[in-house]
Length: 191
Image 1 (cartoon, helix red, strand yellow):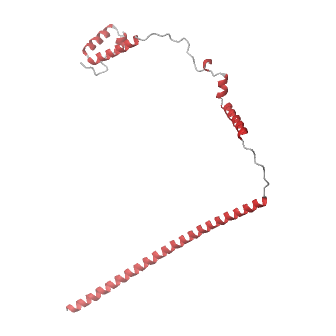
Image 2 (cartoon, helix red, strand yellow):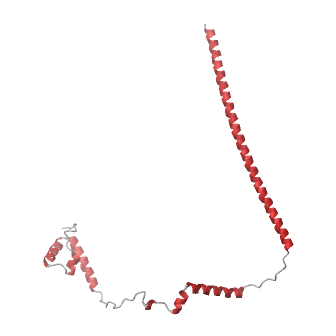
Image 3 (cartoon, rainbow, N blue to C red):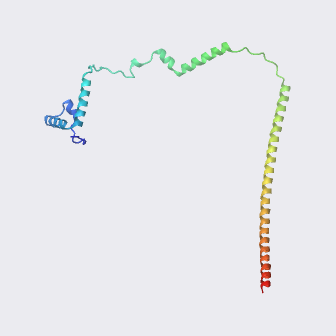
């Protein structure tokens, strides 16, 4: 017999732990004798209970330590080094010391020639202004040329369309004339 329905199956955990009353226990034993699936499940539960029985019993701790307890508080020197302000101050102090020992000697100050500096600044400013003006002028010329070419292309397209229409009309007129002349000549020669 195979038992697929969960409602008809006995509670095997209660059976193995001895929590079933006598009639329910007898019914579970009869069911297990006839059902192979339930026999496998019951065997697995018994193996689990046997494995648990082999473990040694340990005493439950009487006091549980919490994170807020003094046991987990850092020492005074740990508090000092864990503060970000102390770490930043130590880093700045180390940088000052290193800078004091590694700093190159200062070069002697030379007198500044203000007239030469002003002439150089004036020259550079005028060169940059000329370059900017030339670039702006080139852009303006390029834009004007492009606009003119665009207008010329539009005008040429308009003229071509008009000319094509005129030639088409003239060709149609001539075609009608030729047809009429041909009709007159062929009609006169046939009579």
